Every structure is written in C-alpha cells, then in structure tokens.
Image (tube, rainbow, N blue to C red; front, top):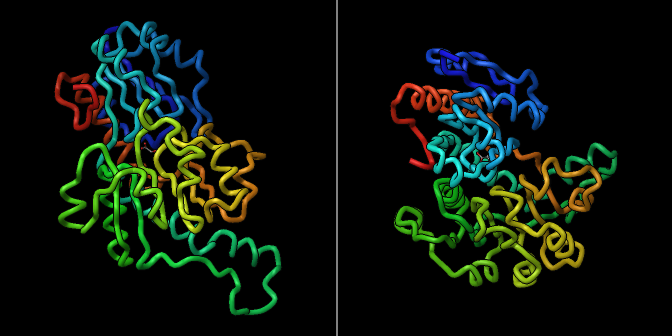
Amino acid sequence: MDNPYVFITRKVPAETIKAIREVADVKMWDHEDQPVPREVLLEEASYATGLFTMLTDQIDQELLDRAPHLKVVGNLAVGYDNINVEAATERGVTICNTPDVLTDTTADLTFALLMAAARRITEAERYIEEGKWVNWSPLLMAGQDVHHKTIGIVGMGRIGETVAKRATGFDMNIQYHNRTRSEKAEQELGASYVSFDELIETSDFVVNLTPLTDETKGMFNKDVFRKMKKTAIFVNAGRGGSVVEMDLVQAIENNQIAGAGLDVYEKEPIPEDHPLLQFPNVVCLPHIGSSSVETRMEMCRLTARNIRNVLNGDEPEAAVNR
Ligand code: DGY
C-alpha cells in the first residue's frame, strides 16, 4: 500500500478527522454505538499505518503482532488501559491520547455525580415520574449537604485538580492522596495531602480519579469501604477496575456507606440486572465523563491531529510513550 492507511474504529463526525485525510487514506467503522468486532479490527490492523481507537478496543500483543505497518494509535480518551503500551513501544508504535481537552468537562461530570448522589437528584426525579409526590413535607428527599463538607480526592492529576477547584466554590475542605504531591492543589486550592487511610476514614465524599494500573486495580475493596464514614459517598469517575464491585454492593447493602455516584464499571456496559442498579442511593451513569458535544468533538480533532503528525514525522500533541 502506497499511501498511509488509517482505520477509525467507530463512526465519528467526518469534519473532525480532516487532519488525517491530509496524509492518509481513511476507512471508518460505520457504527456509532457498536464497537468494531475483534476479527475486523485484527484484519484492518494488518494493513493499517494508523488506528484511531476507542477505549472499547483492546490494542494488545496479539493485535500488535499482526500489524507490521502500524506506526501510531490515537486513542479517543485520556486513559489508555485498553492498550499494551509496553508492547507498542517495543514495536516503535506511538500511542497518543487526549489529555487537557477533556479536563474541565470530566471534572464537571464528577462534581455532578457527587451532587446527584448527595442531594438524591435522580431518585427525586424518579419519585415525581412515578407519581409518588403527594405533598411537600419537611424531610422529603432530604439528602446530605455538599457545602463545607470534606472531599477526599484519590488521584490528583489534571482532572483531580479541576474537581478540587470546583470544590472551593462549595467551601469544601479538600484533601487528596496521590503518588506525587500537587503544588497547585496545595498552594492555589488549599488542599491537604493525606495518607490513603486518613483520606478514606475522614472524607465525606471519596472521589476516585486514578487511572487503572496494577497499583490501582481493585484498590477500593471491602476493607476500604469498611473504613469509610457511614455517611460517606463514594464517587468513581476514574476506571471501574479500581473497585471490587461486589464489595461496593455489600457496603451499600449493609449501610457501611451512604451512597455512591458511578460513571465507570468493572464491565462496561454494566449489565441491566447488576445489583448496583437496584439501589436508590447509587447514581449510575454510562461512562460519560468527557461527553459534552464540544469536548468529544475536540477529542476527535486532537486524535486526528495526533495521528497526522506522527504519520508526517512530526511530534504529536499528546503521546504517552515518546
Ligand atoms: C477517558 O478519556 O479516559 C474517559 O474515560 C473517556 O470519557
């Protein structure tokens, strides 16, 4: 094949991928809501110089072994736990992602989840829809305050810092735990660095924003939920794999914590009959952290520019392994 060839694994707006068309032939999987079947992806990867991928595509050793021409993978996400980066690096394949452009939008959604769980927003809406609202009453749908409470952010990267900034507007006491200290969080936002144990034991809202790694896999387990305040609300907008979901189910069932707001799950989509979907005090969203029209369009454009740049021999705007 003479021209570079890029396969896009989901239907994305044509106007967002113009940058790729400047340098390569492009084929797009024709479905917006259906991941490309594995065998099609493997077949396409065997010709492709570039792949434009989603977090639902596994870019593993098997795929990389079958992709002799592959130079770049542009993943439409800031997270890249669906990609074997080490194997890609060994083969000289550049892995690109979409940091920064989604930071504010994902922080907004994280805060919305926190508020929805605290103030029982989705439960209250269902209450009206089900015709249950007969009267105003003093403790009708009484939730928990957000203002002046303690938020504990686990994973203080760009999104964590931006959630912390949101929290300052609610006069919250902000504490965080992270591998490294954040000068910005401490100096500009007044956040305190605490140990993981102190954070989970003393926070009213425990917010997970860590990426999924060997270190974070299953870190929110029964021991952790047991140590949380009985009034605590757990929010997860990082990755579902960081939580042992059945331990969370038990913590909710046994009233060890007061509720949860979840955007991500061990298995996505979360099965319809999953116990987490049965609790009125658990707000579940379908992994839409970065999903505003503006941000998703910008993520597509950035992914397209990343791929174009690598194929042109230029530096991509965001790469995780170079
Ligand atoms: C990401 O970018 O990693 C998000 O989870 C996608 O919304």
